[in-house]
Structure formats: structure tokens, C-alpha cells
Length: 353
Ligand code: NAD
Image 1 (cartoon, rainbow, N blue to C red):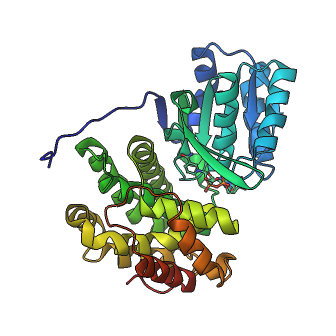
Image 2 (cartoon, protein in one colour):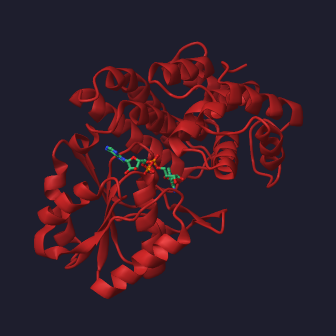
Image 3 (cartoon, rainbow, N blue to C red):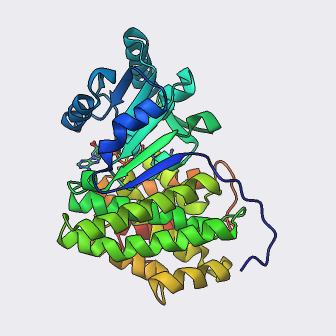
């Protein structure tokens, strides 16, 4: 209920959603008045980038298939050099958060417009946020120039997202929406999107795990991911995102898996301090939302615990210390022992407590 007063700022952006929507890419390039776009991807998705460039035809200036996780500044500098050498006047990013991150990093340095074609559920395309790494340090900034101009969601391009990454990427999206429900600057519009996003994703992910090419479940998941991305771009995140940032960065852990493992524990920690958000979560996830998300993670085949994805057990103390390093807002104040226990349980892959 809108019982509290609030401020809501909507982010601009044009969204095209559906099956086969990639066919509209040339029109969108035209609409933005672009003549020479650079297509971006990871090395793994190079062939998709090549297909896209072929589809764009003479308005494709070239391909840069060097996007990697955590947006290292040296990769961005290489890409900007290619932009300049080719005289590109825009970028088209096809892929997950890593490729979107590269497009944003180019845009914030050059002012070039971006068209993003997301193929995971990370949601970065809906946010004015950019995290970059340089010499092992990750810095995050927010700037309206970082927000992509156009996003083309084509459900068909997500059919090949492997089952495990589909599940963890989807729970990564759910995390944005869950924390939006108890953000200090939450508002009723974003909360509606958050609940709809969680509902769409939690319903679709088990189906996708059994049948990755189920077109309706894929459409529901991508729709949910879009909504969850809007949440991430609109309100402030808290303990869960902070822990993922700190732990993922310190031990170089895979992004979506880290989110999937930590989320049930972060929610259980915050539960006593978020009665209203907890009720809202119950309305879409059932009696015990934290346990439901732990079970969803198991159902989609997520790794069991941070230990299983490469965090050393001795890292639990360091992670605890770092969680306190830069103070940030959270509905429940940070208490050292409970936070250490939270991380230890996440490390083991135990159910949330
Ligand atoms: P990713 O982009 O690193 O993708 C993981 C791998 O899967 C890559 O090799 C990619 O090429 C491949 N892949 C992507 N889509 C595929 C598909 N449909 N089929 C087969 N393979 C596919 O992973 P991610 O989880 O999407 O993004 C994680 C990164 O995004 C992190 O660096 C994270 O910090 C960032 N991120 C940023 C924001 C933001 O708002 N700034 C939001 C979410 C994530």
C-alpha cells in the first residue's frame, strides 16, 4: 500500500519484447540515425555476433568479441580503440551482463548510443550502473549516460542458454526484485514490478530446467528478468548485493551462481526487520520465501555452496571483515557473528537459518 510517501524516477529507454524481435534491429539502427555500429560479444558468443552483423549488413562497422566478466578497463580501452579506428557511431551488445557492461563502458567514454540484445537474465541493460575492474579493484558508478537507448528482448535468443545458467541467472534477477521490496527508497510502482518479476521467474525456472526450449517458460523468464532489471536500476540494493559484490570480487567467483547461493541466507538474515516485504514475498513464494529460494536453487541444479564454486573455507573471516568495510544501508543492522554465520552457511550450502 502507498502508506508511506515516496519519490519515483522512471528511467528512459525503449524496449522491444517478443519472439523473433531481432528482425527489428535494422529498423532500430535506422531510428537512431546510426550508419556504422560496432557489434559486441564475448569470445564464446562470437558466432552470434557474426550472425547479427550479417543481419545488419552495410551498417555493421565490425565486431569486437572480447567482452569478459567484470568489465576490465584494459579491455574497454582496446574496444574504444576499435571504435575509433572503425569510426563507429554506435554499439550493439549481444550477450549477458559482461557484454552489456562493455557496451556501457564504451558509451560512458564516447557518448555513443547503445542497443542491447540480452541473452541472460542479469538485467544490466535496465540500469544506469557500471562496475569496472582495474588492477583487481572493482569500482561502481551510476550515470544517466550509461543507460542503453534501446533494448531488444528476443525470447528465441534465450532458448540456448544452458539450463544451469538459466536457473542461476534467473535467481540473480529475483535477487534484484527481492531487495527492491525492502529498499530504503522503495516505492509502490517498483514493488509491483518486483512481485510480478519474482512470480514470473519462480514459475518459469523449474520448467526451463526440464525443458530449456519451452518457449512460453522462456518468455515468462525474460519478461521477469526485464522487470527485475528495472527494479535494480530504480532503487537502492542492500546486504545481499553488497555480500555478492564483496565475496564475488574477493574470490573471483561466477556472478549468477554467487547470487543464487547467497540470496536465501541474506533474506533470512533480513527477515526479522522487513515484515511488510516478507508478506509480499510470501504472496509469491509461499510461507518461507528464503527456504523456497534455496529449494528453487536446488531444483535448477545450482552448485551447493560457495565452497563448491571456489571460495576457500579460510575466506569466511576475510569475507566477514569486508562486509563491514564500507558501511551501507540495510534494514537490519549488521551484527558480526550472525553475518559470519550467514557466510559460513552459504559456504557449506546449508539451508537458510
Ligand atoms: P555473462 O555475461 O558473463 O555470461 C556468462 C557466459 O554465458 C558468457 O560466456 C556468455 O557469452 C554466455 N552466454 C550468455 N548468454 C548465452 C546464451 N543465451 N546461450 C549460451 N551462452 C550464453 O553473465 P551474466 O550473469 O549475464 O552477467 C554477469 C556480469 O554482469 C557481471 O560482471 C555482473 O557484475 C554484471 N552485471 C551488472 C549489472 C549492472 O547493472 N551493472 C547487473 C547485472 C549484472
